[in-house]
Image: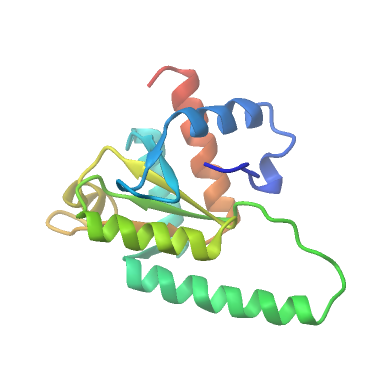
Length: 171
């Protein structure tokens, strides 16, 4: 994992340094020859609650293709805005992809490419949950989710703080 710039809302938070460290030490390559890595995380009750809130607020997109479309549209908007101002935007995490643990290598190769295209805005995390468990958490029994994209920096911040709290408590 390269130099991780957490969302600005976490910059002064007391958990920021510990969180960045934990994300780094918990990271594993997305696949055998990956350029990017993803921190391994638990789908704890605290994380599930944050995901539920983000889902209720319309701040989660399910699936790789849908995530690619959203990120591409945001990127076009950012490039357009950059052309209209002389203020340089910082390279910080503002989107998060949460991955199920039972995808095929091809899936993780595609996620690796997605993260590479949109870095440093996108951070990948890999749950210890399979697609059925991750899907059921938000969409109900029998539903699957291999990838969830958190599309708002406040949702990303809330999820990262939930992880920090879990890690502080030893969960």
